[in-house]
Length: 350
Ligand SMILES: Nc1ncnc2c1ncn2[C@@H]1O[C@H](COP(=O)(O)OP(=O)(O)OP(=O)(O)O)[C@@H](O)[C@H]1O
Image (tube, rainbow, N blue to C red; front, top):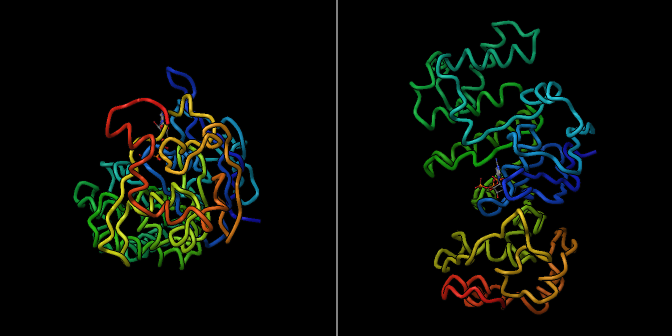
């Protein structure tokens, strides 16, 4: 049994134009102690996926279908009260936006102690204070500063305090949503290393949500690449960033600096992800894909499995034999329908 099993999950938002299919048929599993990165451009559904797991979707959002099983309980069938108990004790979220969720009128210690005592009623004050000290040390904050108020901390310190608070109950699953985006590179590195060390101590699993593939390469065992609400590709980090099979992953990989090839030109995938209220039939990436054919525009791709990877591209099996040199060539990417549209303003089809 996996720690977390997401099966055929659909999460929609009610909008004026109709339901937006933010997460559409997403499936994956997460094992105990494993880290899974979720990458993709802005708006592809990463945060929606995390929020549906922890049960904090905004009012407009709803689970339209599928299952989220955590330790074999179906979370989608739970009441709000059951979900709230799970949040903190079992599943905790470290989010950029959560930095603002520290209460300004209480000290950091008061907030962490309250979380501990609410969720573990038998815990005495001395033990709670010990946990605060231990967590502060783990995230590299001076425990003497625990009696400060949030406004007395810098942004980076507040973020560390949030991480300390999220980890105080030793959750089995940590959802880290852009955990380091607002921090400078040195601080980012420190925080990621610390999260890794904390994880080793408490043996928790982690979903790392980010648009930055280098963060995933550093912290994760496996990666799920999302595009326009769907899984494009999933597999071990070395495979996905080494020899991906999905053209979107190939493009995404070339959009980030490569430490091994620092002189390589960075690529930008022209165009934008499609509207999710009325998404295109067929492959959602077709308009921006240099290898798209009529079949891609008409028929939705099924999963192809090879080399431990799961790739949703009709031509995944041909990439290695025929298409990789073409897909790896930056010139290729300026020939897509979306690239032509971006350059000429021409809205004509392919
Ligand atoms: N409250 C909402 N109401 C309507 N649509 C929403 C709402 N929140 C998100 N969406 C839409 O759902 C889609 C997925 O958004 P989501 O925030 O999950 O993406 P993301 O990949 O996390 O993006 P980012 O990296 O920018 O945070 C987007 O098209 C977005 O516009």
